[in-house]
Length: 470
Image (cartoon, rainbow, N blue to C red; front, top):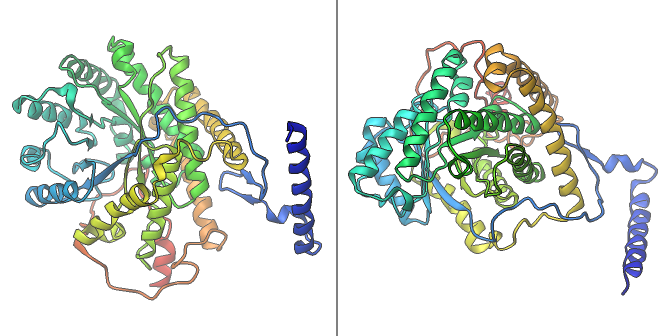
């Protein structure tokens, strides 16, 4: 069939579909079938195929399954690490106690050697989740590698140094940025000299996401952090050979499947544009994902398993290079063995049974996903430019400007949940009966500290509804 024949057949099929839709609508407008995202992007029920936009820069290979290790007892964390690696994990995400996502738990820096004693670290991908002390932990890990006489060039190691997210989480220490910037630049230079390959720095959007930011603002936060770290590396005098692989992006994956796919694809497009504008030679852009903390619920916690599966699917389809899944008991405290195992199995089923990785960028050419990706990238870029106009991410955070915009987005989203416009299954629709906390090893420790005014809070969207139900 000729191109004109294909076009005519497609038009005839669409016309037939519309006739059936109009009959089903019974006089209601076609616009009733158009859904809108929280950012205001319209998603039509039928969008013509689009020219694929290349969002991937790697072949059809599985993403790395990372298991989150955050137990404060070194012996227990060591056992959990080996259990995860023997159970199918490709690597470990080590969460230290000062990391914004530790939530009162996490590994002590002094326990690093004991934790990794039985782990073959040159054969196991490792990601460090750190906070204000990220540079110190990176130096400790480098010393551990040297003590074992391991060639750093053989390792798959993400150092996860991210002072800007740590400042945003605690709402203070912004004035330390100039000194911190210089110290981290010098550290990265030393690590590169020792043949570590990176990534060394993480442009992490998870804290913005947890504070209630919509997807465009999360991407803008990541882009602004990425640019800030590029400047840091340039000030340290590092060449393109180091800078090109020095920074990774980190995103939250939630149960809004299409938006999460578009988010990961849009992030890659934005970072590619930033790298090109910075004069960096073409190279892979590394993106790590973690399932969303803010989407988890305490009421009907088993529904968190479904949310995590959708989020992991979307992150994988969107092009995550590595992924960690939170246990379904995350909102109750420190997870026990069964929730950790299910978190890992969620990824294994998607990779080994669903074979999700075998198609590169499976959404490419989908009219709705391509349009959503481009619209999201354009809006996120506009918000990124607003942060740059304020002097960059550190300056915007210091002035409280970005926190104020995210607070507005958070209030709007919570109001939509309270009004029932946004549904949380098991909480504000089909509420489940209260149940005892499932398998956890310890509840969250009580926090006595008052949150500073400029801190980006960590919230769960269902908290208010859960309190009302109680």
